[in-house]
Length: 87
Picture 1 (tube, one colour):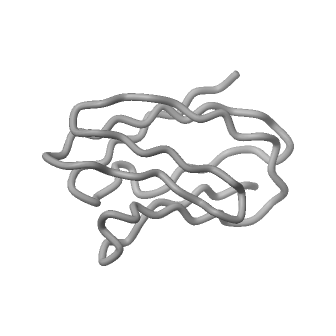
Picture 2 (cartoon, helix red, strand yellow):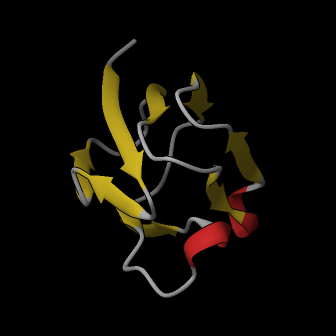
């Protein structure tokens, strides 16, 4: 299963987006390198992961149809967020 690494630092995602193939499961490893809590969330997909400072975890994403899926850090709503672009 492909693995994509994402960091969150005080509401800023790095990278800000990833491109993945349609119809394939994949894993996103998420690490909070910021000074406070962070959240990796997309409610329509029912994906939510809250991470304390310095914590790393992962989510497995089911096969998706082509399109763009936006994730936010609810602790930093003023920031741009993160996109999964499915092709």
